[in-house]
Image 1 (cartoon, rainbow, N blue to C red):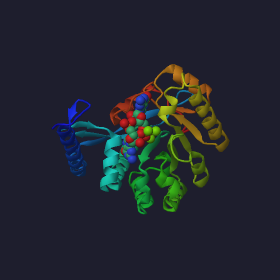
Image 2 (spheres, helix red, strand yellow):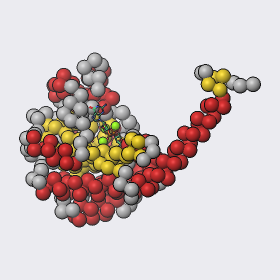
Image 3 (cartoon, rainbow, N blue to C red):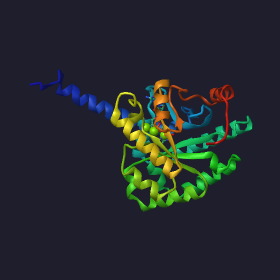
Image 4 (cartoon, protein in one colour):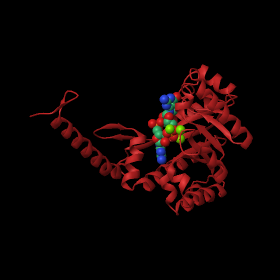
Length: 282
Ligand code: C2E
Ligand code: MG
Ligand code: MG
Ligand code: MG
């Protein structure tokens, strides 16, 4: 007797779940090899100041799996967090970013900040500040050229250890940005517990700024908070000129999104920098 559920037999559902489980196990195994097999790359998305010039880029990891093709970074990071490979992945991304930034500096693009996403789990690693320092020195960079984007999470709001590491990193002169601001846990609290240089309003809030008046109010409030704390306010997912203009009017300082540019390969970034005026760091 087959149980029919949403037009599928129970057997089909079970076998599909098995398949998902198998793929997940495959992916964890493959992720460990991916770094050495040159399957991971990093792309960089420009961030523009309200007056137009580029202030920096955000680094985003990409994985092209030999069989499954594009694996989303959200999935990749989740797998790495679950399997205990997040420090290895995070450190690899960080080193790639330092290599790229050093190359850009040589080409004369000094005034740009390199922003790198960090999983909250990486902040449990006591060796992280020393690793960052070593990497930055090795490639001849200075700490204030680097910004870490930290996603709000329960890990961050609950842990003294994480707070200590973040303060240590901030004391080194590395900038900190609160990513996905407005979505997670007690955003306002964090700003008082460690030094934040920037807040990035979550894309889900900025994307419908033209049609959702509640979100528009949230953005105005976050912008006012940023101003009073002398923290720059970044809007992500800016896809159209109309959105950009509305966000400027609401007090955002920096803009990132497909309106300006998608994430680019390092070589294409160099071209992009040349074709846009670069001025001051912030
Ligand atoms: P995020 O840090 O909030 O990054 C912004 C995401 O928005 C990126 O997605 C970017 O490609 C996408 N995006 C940029 N402009 C637009 C736009 O105009 N419209 C829309 N709809 N999307 C836009 P992506 O690359 O898929 O990354 C997703 C998330 O994965 C990131 O969110 C970040 O949390 C995480 N992630 C990516 N790379 C890394 C990494 O190297 N390490 C860690 N720990 N996390 C990473
Ligand atoms: Mg980010
Ligand atoms: Mg974000
Ligand atoms: Mg996000």
